[in-house]
Image 1 (cartoon, rainbow, N blue to C red):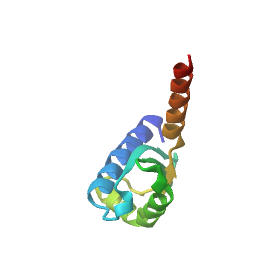
Image 2 (image 1 turned 90 degrees about the horizontal axis):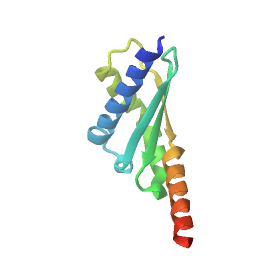
Image 3 (image 1 turned 30 degrees about the vertical axis):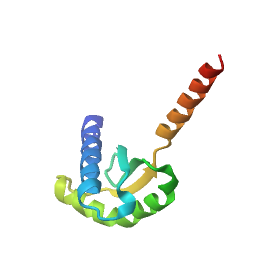
Image 4 (image 1 turned 180 degrees about the vertical axis):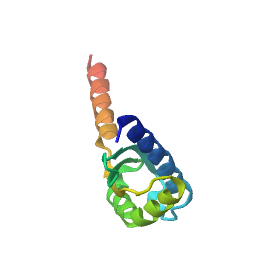
Length: 114
């Protein structure tokens, strides 16, 4: 599958899953989740959905809630997207945002010492 079509599918997945999490999923643990990216395999059998969580102290509960809601989210996604086969979803915590914040904090501390 060409990369442009895959990028379009990934972009649509981020948009649709964000909407589903915000409006359809009733689990309280999923309220503060942001979908940052989607990476779909070239054969569309598998998709990693990268998420960040506003309150990091609830990371474990939120990731478990996403795992439990995976079937519902996949079913809703299948109804909204025109794909012959809906990929299997895996939710992954996106470490890059937290990493960037830690670096920013270190830089700030260095400047304060000067």
